[in-house]
Image (tube, rainbow, N blue to C red; front, side):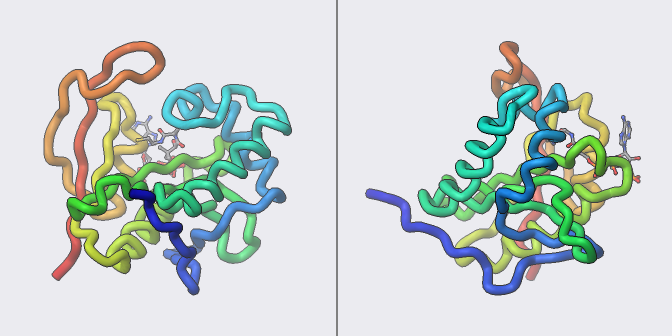
Length: 184
Ligand SMILES: CC(C)(COP(=O)(O)OP(=O)(O)OC[C@H]1O[C@@H](n2cnc3c(N)ncnc32)[C@H](O)[C@@H]1OP(=O)(O)O)[C@@H](O)C(=O)NCCC(=O)NCCS
């Protein structure tokens, strides 16, 4: 059975200066900056030190996720300037069970000012508009203090440590499980 295509929300979700909108080719410089991060290529499909072609292909794949029904991959942009700052994704393969996972990254040049927490807050509020979604999960490596603080800032609760949960960068790693549940 194929998954139905998703539609972007009619009003772009936003919170405190960060708007979640569709990716556009003009976001290429942000994607090239993201690809200089040593960790981002290990947890997604953006090649390390991506060139222009590879970054454009990455942008195309973000649109494909909507078409395939895999989830929403938003560009996190500044509400004032519309400059791309990072990415925030809501992944829906477990939606039939009422669950989703979220992921985020901020371009190195835009870090250090809480962008991810604001993007995750906007993403989570948007998540509660998805019918049948009750729980959003985050998987965070224990060393990743900035990501754990991001989860805290967006109201997620730490639920435990999942030992040897998955492979990242060629080795098995533990993951902290954080989750938010649909407010009453
Ligand atoms: C994780 C990430 C998205 C955070 O981006 P950001 O919004 O720029 O985060 P900030 O630098 O503003 O930091 C957020 C919080 O973490 C804290 N923090 C940042 N680096 C830290 C560190 N090395 N140790 C402890 N705390 C740290 C900040 O002080 C801030 O805390 P506050 O909320 O109390 O002010 C970004 O570092 C990133 O893209 N990393 C690579 C991809 C990644 O790890 N994604 C998440 C996968 S689970």
